[in-house]
Amino acid sequence: MKKFRSVAIDGPAGAGKSTLARQAARELGYLYVDTGAIYRTVALRVLRSGADASDPAQVISLLDRMEIRMDYGADGEQRMFLDGEDVTRSIRENAVSGLASQVSAIPAVRDFLLEYQRATAREHNVVMDGRDIGTVVLPDADVKIFLTASLDARARRRVNDLVQRGQTADFETIRREVEERDLRDQTRSVAPLKRAEDATVLDTSSLTLEESLLALLKLIREPVVP
Image (cartoon, rainbow, N blue to C red; front, top):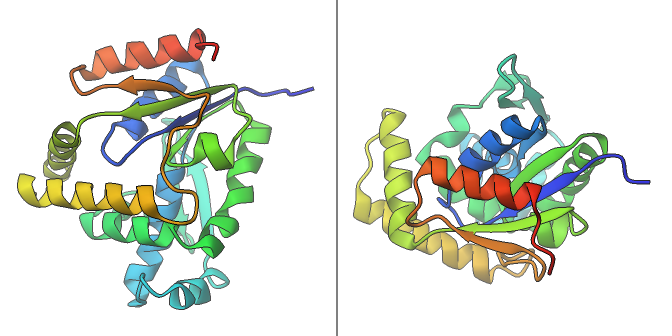
C-alpha cells in the first residue's frame, strides 16, 4: 500500500513553480523537491569545467566525477551541494539557467538523476516541480498540476528575481531567453515539456502570488477528477 502522497507540478520557465511549490509544501507539511535545482547543479559543473553543454559526450564525461547532494536547512529550504560545496545561490545565476535547459535534454543526465528523484517521493510526502514530473518522473502522482503564465508575465518575474538577487537584467533580453528556452524544452526529443493528460492547468498570469498559492492549495487539497 502506498504510504506517501505526491504532488507533481510542471510548467514552463518563469511560471512560478518553485516559489509556489515551496510555499505549498510548507503549508502542507510536505517535502519540497525542486528538480530544476538538481539540473542546475549539473549545469553549474558544466559551466565551471568549461565543457560544451551542446556536446553530450563532454557533459556525460563529468557525471562519474560529480557528487550531487540535496539537503534541507533548519528553515526547511532545499539546499544543493556540489562536491561538498553549498551552491544553492550559485545555481541561480543567469548563466546557469540557459545551460540547465541544454543539460536536461541529454538522456544520460536524466537517467543519472531519475531514480534519485523517485526515491525521494517513495520516502516522503512531496511536492515536486519541474518539466516532466507528471509525465515521466512521477507518472502515478496523486495530484498533477500544469502551472503556466503568459510569456510577458514570466519574463517580468524573471527580471524581478534577478534584480532582487543583485544582478542586472534587461526585459527584452530576458523575454527572448525565456521564449528560446520554451522552444528548447517543448521540442527536445527526451522528456519534452508538456501537460500530462490528467493534469489540471493553473494559469497565474493575472493572479498575485497570494492568489496563486490559494488556487494551488485548493487543487492539491481538492483534486479535480479527470
